[in-house]
Amino acid sequence: MCVPVDSLRDVRLVGDGPVANVRVRCVSKQPRLDPHHGITHLGGEGWNWTRAQVVASIEAKTNTFYTMVGGTRANVGVVDGPNGKYVRTHADGK
Image 1 (tube, helix red, strand yellow):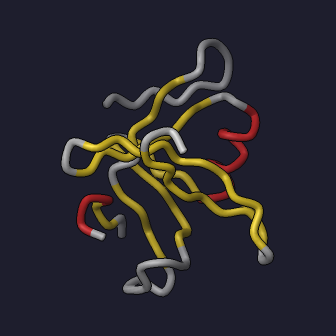
Image 2 (cartoon, helix red, strand yellow):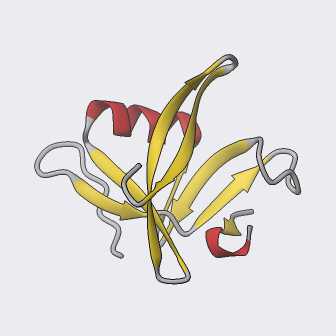
C-alpha cells in the first residue's frame, strides 16, 4: 500500500529520450509507521517503482523525481549510506 507523501505532475517514465520530471505522490515503507526508515517503493499516478529502480533511474539520469507538499517542491536525490543507497528529498535544490 502506498502512503501519500504529504501525509508523513505529471508522470512519464522514459527509457530513451528526454529526462522526465516525475512527481512522487506516495511511498511504501517497512516498517510502515517509521518516519525515517524503510522506504521500499515510490509511486505516483500510474506508476509504482522499487527504491532500487528509482535510485538506478536517478543515477542513470533517465528521470528526475520530486515531491510537492504544501506548495513546496523538494527534489529526490540518492544518498550512499552505510547500509546501501537510499533516497532523500532535498528542499530548495540542496
